[in-house]
Image (cartoon, rainbow, N blue to C red; front, side, top):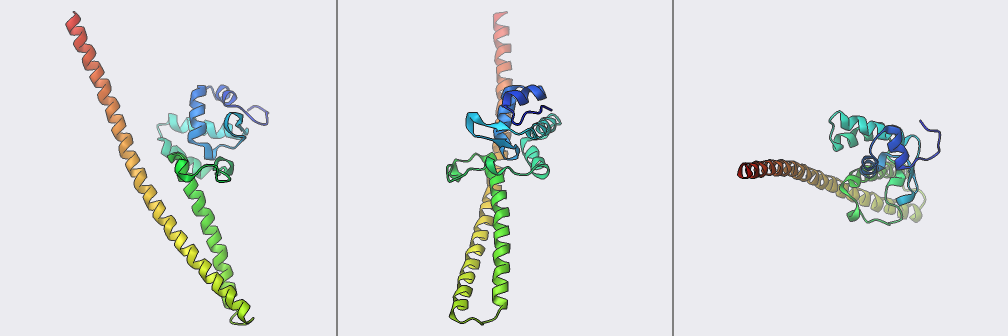
Amino acid sequence: MTGKKVLSVAEIARELELPESTVHYWKNRFAQHLPSVGRGRQKRFKPEAVEVFSTISRLLKEGHTARDVMDQLSQAYPLQADAMPQDGCVAPVQMSGAAMEPAMQMAATIGLEIAKSVSEGIRSVMAGGGEGGPEVAEVKQGLEEAATRITTTMEETAMLRSENEYLREKLKVMEAEMIRLRKDRREMEKYLLDKIKSVST
């Protein structure tokens, strides 16, 4: 592997002997697992990204779907925080389906960690009894309200996850339909070519 600090798409394509267009597609499709710096045209990849690209190439050559590849990358490589939208620059509705799934996973993980920390704090304060007068009562009330909000948020997250699963199933159906339509088109083209040949001879 090259000793350079960061690599361009062209350099990665040369190193892995892949078409540059393929690496461009993968860098967008699997962005959340590719260690990189910069954005847009200035985006460059850290040397460890070569291993991720190589893994993607191997899995796809073995016949795995893009979704299978994403699942395996999720288990083998950490999510890259810099691949997620920052500072509210991109609204969730503008994110592609590919980016939405890992974003949901990351949000769910962060939410669970926050909920765990807050619930431990609530238990420790509640265990202290009623000592401390009105200030402690106010803190307890605030914590109870926060716990209620967290519960509501977790329920909303579960609902979003369910909707996401439904959309994923719809997408699978649409992908299967597209494959069928492509096959029908090829068969129609072949049929028309055969007809043209038979008429012209």
